[in-house]
Image (cartoon, rainbow, N blue to C red; front, side):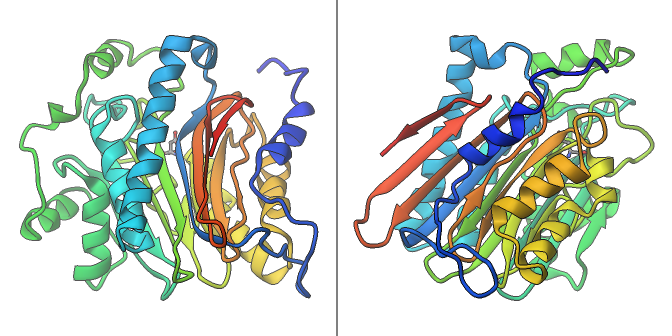
Length: 345
Ligand code: ASP
């Protein structure tokens, strides 16, 4: 791969764009929240090489609108008295129904031309987690992941067993796997031989007003994936993790590397046991442990104090945040694709 001369700038930009804004630290080295936030919602819609998506106002506008909708769906749940897990589920359900993203409808396809979906959800309050991998018939894989968490003794179900379980749970299923197709994905069927890097995995992390952290991720996986391949998204500790004593994380990128580096758990561990700030820990993993060639991608994370971060080591990541200040009740929101963020209050 060609060396990117601008690469050294990216870490600095990622630091600037992160939501950690405090100078004071507690005795573990963690940043104290300034100001205190009633809740924090952070979302991603995938990372990768974006081409000129961010520069085309029409294309970028569609993604901005979708990120804004996702954030406000989460906000409505929390303002309406729902908890963080309900917010994460609602946000991811929205993304799964939006063909712009590589999750649910609009998912990327396997080498054999099927849509095989992965999803996970984890609650930091008790480390309970549920995941499904390679499902072909569940309309909303995030609901199936939640059902595994709450209605089964297991953490991860895969393939036909996971589809059967979802059906038994009364979740909405689709008989025809091509339900997940869009004109865009059907075009990809014809391009299966071509080397391509499609992106658009979705994720959401929330710190709610009770101090509970939840993380969720949903994806169609990597374009042209083979032989029942499962990526990082449904692997607890790789693409998804939440711990009330630490952080909630959702990852996107080249899953094989995120699994090898246990990115989500690694971030929680650096924060919790090394006393690194969320931003330092995330930055280290994304830029020093992973890199553009080996582990292209990014993550979103929020810690127990309401700091959040959204670093990526590739040309872009659909991402956004929304938080409510406790004292003023003011809501702050921002979203972006490349370095540039659109921020509003
Ligand atoms: N991480 C996902 C996977 O490897 C893909 C992505 O985020 O684009 O399945």
